[in-house]
Length: 207
Image (cartoon, rainbow, N blue to C red; front, side):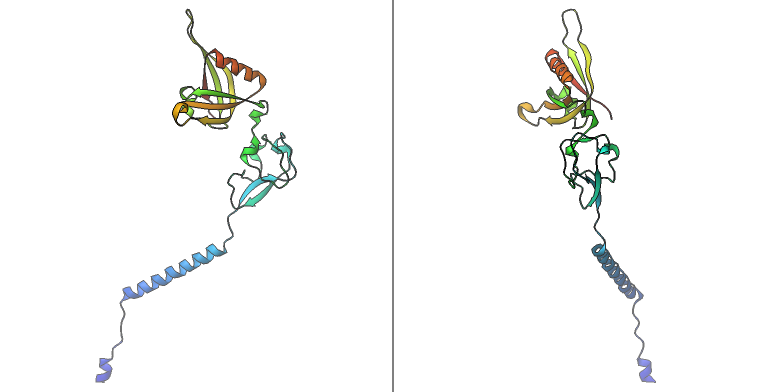
């Protein structure tokens, strides 16, 4: 009996058991996450591609447009349908299967203005350079005052589409903004005359 009395069951602290249980749960969860990440299919994004040989100058809604799933849509047009791009056209023809990128698309505003005219303006007359390709601008002309007349500002053109913008960064060009506008022949002549007649200001039109 004395021997039995000296042999007592060993008791472990409850906190030690809790730590072992929690560690086991965490390891099991980590292993599950690793297995899930290895077996989960990669994320894909739908993009628009040419369903057949596509001509330039025809609205996308009238063309054979298909959808392809890709792992990265950088530089491509996302979506399952043409949606808001229905009236946009292609700058150049595309072969069947080629992806459609934004740089290949022409907005409907340019359809009636196939030409381009460049203006070089001071930042203070070009929204401080806060312009981007695709913006619409109103073009104002302020004629210089004469001896008996005050300066007069008039609207030369409304809602002109910006094809490209370049903002000076240093040196003599730091305060200049070069803007390329989509125009037709008549508007090109008006803007060229305005450039020689006074001061031109661009007003960015709110979307």
